Image (cartoon, rainbow, N blue to C red; front, top):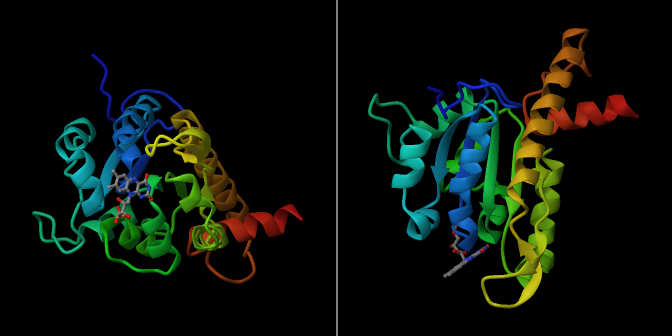
Length: 224
Ligand SMILES: Cc1cc2nc3c(=O)[nH]c(=O)nc-3n(C[C@H](O)[C@H](O)[C@H](O)COP(=O)(O)O)c2cc1C
């Protein structure tokens, strides 16, 4: 019998990931995303905002991930440890899908009011972000500025797609196809591994690559 929680071979075999889910109508797709990441071999723990819990609850994600869902930045784990810090230090990558306009703004400004922003701030691993929202919301200069800021941090943005939205209108705001998000996680881990190999060959700019931003910056500097 095979195990759906990271035991099988695949592009993410044995990798430990965090999946952040925020309060978009597309939150229901995070269940399928979790399954795809597991099918690739990853062990995934889920972090949610309060709004995301309103949309889809925690039970399904908790059951399928076989980890408690971290839904409250102020709640300690049963062993007394701080959940988002433990996650930040344990996982090898964080994927936030779907990411709301509100979450993008919070993250761009370093506001640690939910377990996902808090874990991202505390982590030094690649972060993949897949926004989903109304087309007008995504096109707004405020949202675009927040997305640009996240790119500056070195986060990988999986651009939303054009299509039918929750409002009944069409526009660019649909959550990217889940396969694209999985591919981006695989690519993020591969480039982080390449960066580690490079830095083992010698000091890189004299500073420790302490965040995904640093990882990304050093990789681009070496590519030019
Ligand atoms: C039915 C409904 C659907 C929504 N869908 C989205 C969405 O797809 N994207 C988005 O950015 N906000 C959406 N919102 C608004 C967010 O839920 C709201 O901004 C919330 O505060 C986000 O919280 P969070 O970022 O902490 O999860 C929706 C609201 C409602 C009522």
